[in-house]
Length: 381
Image (cartoon, rainbow, N blue to C red):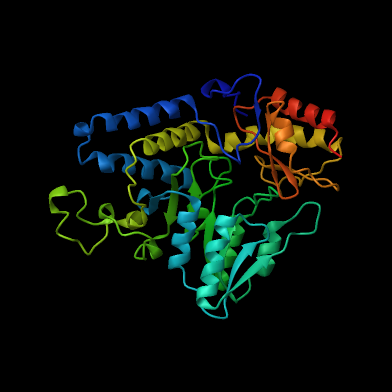
């Protein structure tokens, strides 16, 4: 376990923020990196053409270390939905085939595939919620990966159950049946170890503002080399092969820049967001993602044990991701519960029929105790 890192964050002592899956707080060094980058715009005469590329190159190189890939395979995107839409535009699917998704999958990883199915005459194949106390999403996916599946569009962690998918096994199964694998890693990357080389997805996207501890409106998209000649969502100047020579931009180039760069969002050279996202990822690499997972997991195991005495249950590890605890009970969870807890400065989310508790390295045992005390005191019945 890592020692508590609260000193790096601006979190008051009376705040128990157990809600990283909603949005992470920014670290003080990340804020400083963002402010320094934004301040460049005060003196635009100092923003030389090379600065449109250096920040992006550093982002790619750092993101590649997080996912264990080449920097050339990383595109810079604005959101998970941007990355999913890019995958949906480029992965082939035909009439009569199906696209595999999970029940209660996050909407941004559902709607693009719904539209793609409608456009092609394919169908969505929804993996039902496993009935067991410890829902085995991996087994459920593997049993659904039949010859009709053209694309498996999946997360690493299910956002309303905390269920963890064994993506290495799923990747192997996809290759056996000839299905593409498109991943939304937003609820896991940075808190759960992941390797492109082990899983071998076709596309994988992660927004920065949750477990990557970065700012809103930026993320990374991995594109496997076999798809790097595909069609981007946008056509902008900086994607093209001659972009680094500003004097030649009117000599319209047919060729795109190398690797996954053609899939970059417009205005990717954001002078505030890029350095902030890079600084956050570098801190995660310094901590080691496996240690972040162990630290959050220890807190969640304590919470799960205490919540069981109040009538709540949660899947056990390894079916549940360590950093993700979704507490359920027979009676419904009041939708107003987060507001009730927020008045006590305790912050969690209600997602579906679960209380979603997602601590990070800035949390303490006392934060967890405060949540349990609040649940006991307000007698959620």
